[in-house]
Image 1 (cartoon, rainbow, N blue to C red):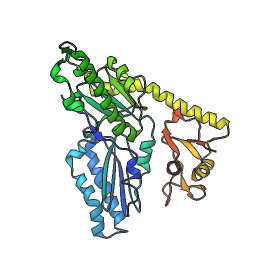
Image 2: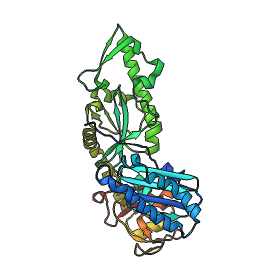
Image 3: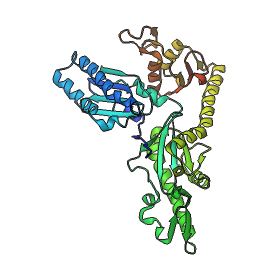
Length: 389
């Protein structure tokens, strides 16, 4: 059976600041948990249509039937797209407004939610971007270049849309000295482990090709993958290429150690497992460093674990780094002018999660927000804020 590897387009936080900001209402936002495999994914389009029904009922209270139909038409078309529903990941985020439609497949679960408002509801999407544990893998061989993104559970291939060269000829084009060499693959593991047969000093030309290829890949990955995402990057390639690539790479997000094996010799599942095993120690060290930094700040009077105090510091723009506990929530209202909070029931009108609200405020004021697993939280309150002053 041919292994099916799903791919998705790189999704970055820039989408919140760009396409999903400054729109004229009404704005429709829909979130849904989806499934990767049959038969679970058969229920996904049914649940999507149910959410569309809720949106239609909400729109009927505020806009004309014609305007409602205009907003929902692209979403209804998506509901009927069988190919789309056969290639879902773990979550779906869909946004529609006058002149705007965006459907995002995400490798993380999302709560089922439909919202009609004057602006897009982006908090669940923001939480996805803030979550730690996400990383990327550069699978590099001379015969194939791929980039994956994921976490401890899944690793999915990015659709690079021609932004990163996929092999040596694509990177070097007419400059490739291929006419001076024959590249033969041995052992059935792809061109990454190839041997060269040249004439005279042509081996040096081959080495120069490889170096130029690595530089071209490095530049493209920095520009089109690492800079937009900000995620740590694990290098998977033959051991003999690890030092060479790292020696010339300008990518500050490249982590050590890498996975020293030809990625073409691995099944997708093997790559998923072995990449996480390689990345996990660096991830654990990063979590420990965040906790240590908070502990140091707290010892100097610059660490806050109290929600009310953190809310005031947040609206004042004094929070530099905010750690939020994954899965933790405090239903209530937060006054954006004073930072005052009021706890309430989640089903009451205008009630949201205070931790989400605080994270949104800190991000808007230039602070850094990280969602970490419960076992990595340095406090028992669900938050740990380091203040600037």
